[in-house]
Length: 306
Length: 195
Image 1 (cartoon, rainbow over the protein chains, first blue to last red):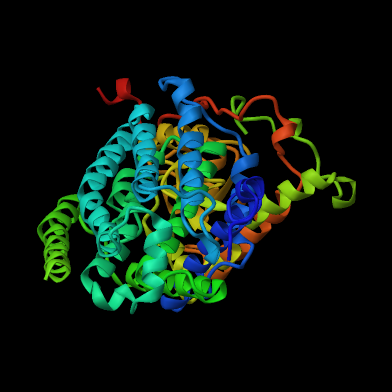
Image 2: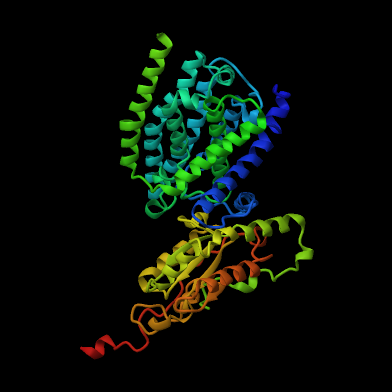
């Protein structure tokens, strides 16, 4: 399918409203799946909508010690970053709205900018829990970012292009890269979990230790924006992985189904694993993740050259 | 009610659902469907706290009503207080209540939160329970209350919250100052008399 008019892309479909609605749906699906895996009933389908509405109409407390401008702007900036990233990614099986050579790097940069915003928001709060949470968020950023980036570069190297559209076209013609590059696929899935601070990588927002991490001081609108930004990031990352590793775009319905399957895998991992300490997270990523993805890269280069 | 606790008569009476505008109805709907709670133990024997945790287990699962236990008071709508208020935790309780953004509700859990329970005469306990320190909307009696009673209490709390304490109803957040509570037990021996 070809991309629709840019304005429609930006405001309605696949960006804008459609993306917001689907991100809320993905959040519900994730929570429901986790609940079902834990033998609970789980939330109703309108639950994320109610959460967002409630947060938006609630009072927003701005502490005296923070930098007001940063406190208000950081959620908006983080939200804008992930919404922009969605324009480069083939969302819902529709071709990306914008394409250029090297847009894969831009997308990864924009997705990381969200984590940086989160860290800055925590550091700005001057709340001791928020500062510790911010430290952990940024530490974790340095841990998962390199392996996650490598895992997304593997398909790029296989397709000999930095353009997302070219890579997805290449992936459509071949066998699923999930089979040819299995380690890269696994690392990209776990990378998404690290990026979104989903358990077992939720040390940055560990409730029992540091209240709510970097977001401890946020209430109302700022919290709602950060939550929506995280949901949108989840949808964007899942679409990216499905497009790269699960056989390109193909049929849009099938594509959406593939992202649901990926989400189910994440929910299963999330409900069956316990939280890592922050040093364990770093150790895991650098000692196992980075080395495995480098090994996969070596294998790929060998195959390409020979 | 102590003089420094908020005056509940200022807050608008219940308005019938039919008279609310669409925006107010939407707000009410969102508030009632998504009550996030924070739990504070103000000096309980831990019985109510253990019973409270059964609410998030598969058997009772309050996530189907949208209730989530939050870590930060800034994220929460409902403050669940268990136990009698000790002098040590009184200031913390008031601080947590003041940190919560409007609109906020308080649920007192267990007999101790109503009257002090078995600790009512204790040398280290605020006389008369949680409502002498912060305004409480609903109490759930029991020692500890059954999980069904707690779920009922939550639902009653959400029911009476309809149309009350809207964001538009107040100009500034409810801030509770340190109330005058009896610092020493009523039947404490006089220090001079002992010497």
